[in-house]
Structures are given as C-alpha cells and as structure tokens.
Length: 205
Image (tube, rainbow, N blue to C red; front, side, top):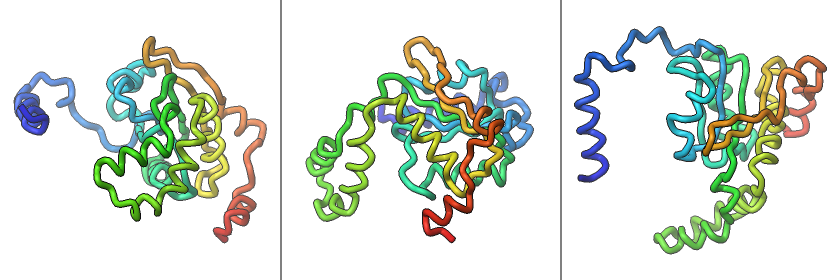
C-alpha cells in the first residue's frame, strides 16, 4: 500500500475512535509552559523527545529542521521564534541537539552529488553552493552546534533580551538530556548583547 493511502486509512480509523486521548477538549493555541523547543528533524526524536521532557500536547511550540540549524538573521527558524514570542507569548527557548546527528556526517559535495544524480540543475545548485558549504562543511559536532545556535539566537536583534535561551543535548538511545547552556545565567548576569549594537553591525538600522 502506498504511504499516502496508508496514512489516510489510519486517519479514518483514528477520527472514528471516540476514546482517543487526542480528542480531549483543546484549550487553545497558546503554549501552557510558554516554551519554544527548537530541535532536529531526526526520526529518532519523534514521540520520544517530548515525553522525555514531560512535554504534552499544548505545552510548547516545537520547531524542527535538519541539525537544528540557524543560517541567517531572519530565516525560517528566527521567523518562527518571532511569531512564537510576540504572538503566542513564548518566554523561554530551548535549543536541543542530539548525539549522532546525521548533519554532522554530511558534506556539501556529498549532497550536491546526490542532487545532480536526481536531476537538479547545476545552475540552480550554483545559487546555493556557498550557503551549503557554509552550513554542512562547518557542522561537525552537535554539542558545538547547539552552543553556536544558542548564541546566534541570543545575539539576534529580533529576540528580546529577557527571553532565556537554553542549550541541551539529547541522547536518542536512552532519552537522557544534558545541559550545555543555562539561559537563566545570561539573563541574570546581564551577559546579553545590546540589540541596537547588533542591528548596527548587521546594517539593519
């Protein structure tokens, strides 16, 4: 059975089940814990990371991409965090990487070779080659990446100084979570950059 047919078939059974735990009353779209989780799209984290954190439906915003990466000053992740903070009341951010991240084993050349094999235009690849190299060829250690992403979010001129940004690493075999960056310390001791200075450096104002 094609995967699309399988999904639709399962869904029909799902919505007909009156005892489903997911059909309980929904209280709203505002996360109860005022928390945004930014993590990787790795399949091993599905239905594992949130339970390991005690996070349930409606508790938090969850943002995912390959390697929990931030590659620009207003790319998709930052835009999502902006909406989460200013529209959904998020007060804390957790950047959660994981051991054995697949992005750490990828290279720009490797991905480009596979893109060419699948018929992607060389001209199209030229447009993104530099960005691919800057991203994939510098991602080697998940722990370092988490620390760097935490710093990028803290330094971003669109993220308020009073929002703690924590950095953690998840072990997808055991579910253990280790703390790398305590965002409360940065807020408590005032170790956050001045946003106006950051804007000037980025030529945003």
